[in-house]
Each structure stands twice: as C-alpha cells, then as structure tokens.
Amino acid sequence: MGVSSRSAPSDGEAAPARVVLRPLATPLPLGFLGQAVASWAFGCLQLSWIGQGQGHTIALGVVAFTVPLQLVAAVLGFLARDPVAGTGTALLAGGWAVLAAATLTSPPGATSSGLGVLLLGVAAALLVPAAVSATRLAACAVLTLSVVRFAVTAVAELTGGQGWLHAAGWVGVVLAATSLYAAAAFELEAIAGRRLLPLGRVAGRAVPLHQEPGVRPMP
Image 1 (cartoon, rainbow, N blue to C red):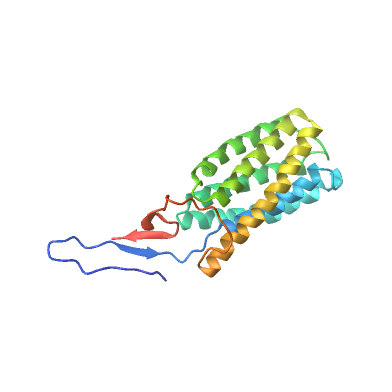
Image 2 (cartoon, rainbow, N blue to C red; image 1 turned 90 degrees about the horizontal axis):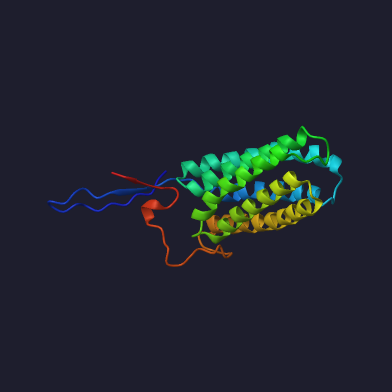
C-alpha cells in the first residue's frame, strides 16, 4: 500500500511525477541488534571473561543468530533502496560468518594469519558504507566502530599478541553498546514518527524526497 501525490497538469505541461512510498521499515535496528550480540559475545571471549573453550558455543550462536538477522536486514535494505543498510549489514554478516567459521574449525585460543588477512579485507570493505553514512551519525558510528573492531581483531590474529586481542575485546564491548543505542533510536523514530533519541542527523544535508530510502518515483 503506497502513498502518492499528484497535481493536475496545465495545458502544455508534462504529466507530473508521482511519488510512491514503499511500506518498508528501516532494517537498521535488526542488523544493529545482531551486531550488538556478536560483538559482545566475542568481546567476552577476547577479554577472557569466559574460558576459551566456550569459543565454539559463541561461534555457533553467531552463525545461528547474528548472521541470519543481518542477511535479512541486508535484503530489506536493498528493497527499501537504502544502500548503506543493505551493503553495511551484508558486509557485517560476511565478516561475522568468517570469524565464526574460523573459530569453529580451530583449537580454542588459536590464532590464524589467514583469518587476519580476511578480516583486514572486511574492515577495508566496511569503510565504503561507513564513509557514505555521514548524514546519519548513529549509523556511521556503528559502521566505523565495526571497521576498528575487525581491523584490531585482524592485527591480533596476525601477531598473536594478547594485548591486541584484549584491545579488540574492549572495542567490541563499546561497539555492542553503540549498536544497542543506535538500534533503539532508529526503532523509536520509526514507531513514533519523530525523533526521541538523538541520531546525529547532519543539518543542512537533507536528502531530496525521491532519494529517501523506501521512496520510489513513478512516472
């Protein structure tokens, strides 16, 4: 069910465009909540708050919980014509799938240079949606912290250093908290129809209506 607006054309004028609003909610809360769970769980493992033997359980949980949620969010993001949500959550799903698969197939506490190289690639790819999400600072913060989170984890895998592993864990805890806040803020805005928690939308950089996520111009 869409919402459209049109005005009758005058003589000699072309028929006006019709704007149709697609009934799709923002998928960012779904993707960010999955991000919070995965980042928190792996953060606890990297900070040694739980035993290394629990790594397989955490990896299975991320594969069963976070990866599917973020893939659904990615599909909905592309359907809503929101490239940041679609691309960002798809890359996050891939990154967590790689980390979880490596954890499942490695001995507890083991590090891998190959995994480190892959995670550096994920961090570099995430720079793209992070850079273009600057008009929504809450989303930008989650994606930027995700870049740091995967990059620091990559360095820990490449060097095998406990200091880097603990640093990755602390970044993961901060990322989990930031993701929870951003998810709540976007969800409340979608339900209430107005901003209840600051999202950091940049003033003076409004997006034209026909370019808003979920809006499709029709001839």
